[in-house]
Length: 152
Image (cartoon, rainbow, N blue to C red; front, side, top):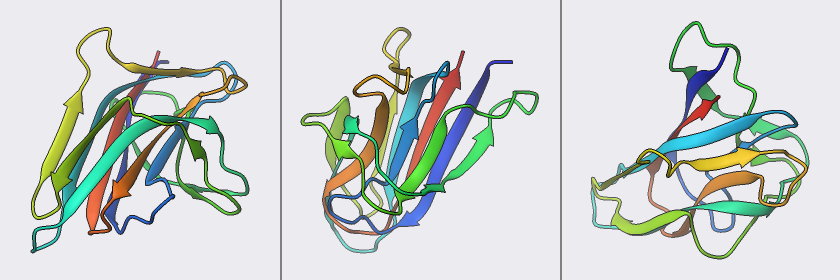
């Protein structure tokens, strides 16, 4: 059964060069990212810049699984991997962004919701750029990050 899933990383302290979350597909699994969001949790003005981008190489070593919730309790177990880090090396993020913006971690909130047909699509784990990640390029303030995806 197809399903909708959400991944959430709470109270993270971003580290330069390290993904906050990564969504990976495996053979015969497709995922369509329909929403991403993040928000700050600090009490002083702190500049942040966060982007959603594809990876050109998957991280190596054991993955740390992130927390996933089913949007429909009758959905099958999600087929895509939602990870928060890798034991050996991080994924290689590509230049640019599918979506990105600067924001203020002092209570700032960002939400991107795909219009129909504008979802970020992932499929075929053997292809280049098959993973999508969220990464902060500027700022290390405590913040939380979420993603919602469908597996048709």
